[in-house]
Image 1: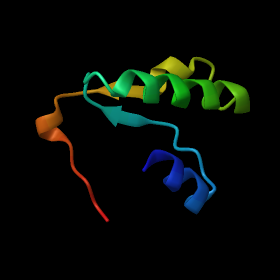
Image 2: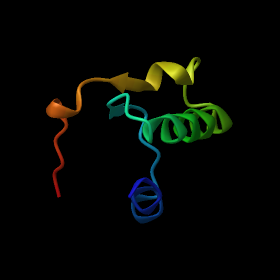
Image 3: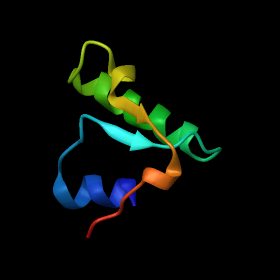
Image 4: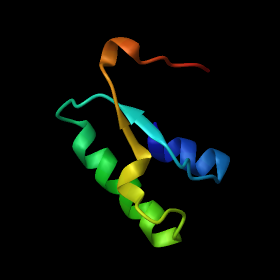
Length: 60
């Protein structure tokens, strides 16, 4: 879903909100890497916002 969003919109979001689930670590790493490569933030690790999955909201 993340890669599809990147390709479809041709935009890289600055912030990414996620829970601390086991599968989210890799996604956070990829997101921070991309932000670092494009120089969009002084500290790309600030772009990851963690919260409980019960607060997640998916809009289409």
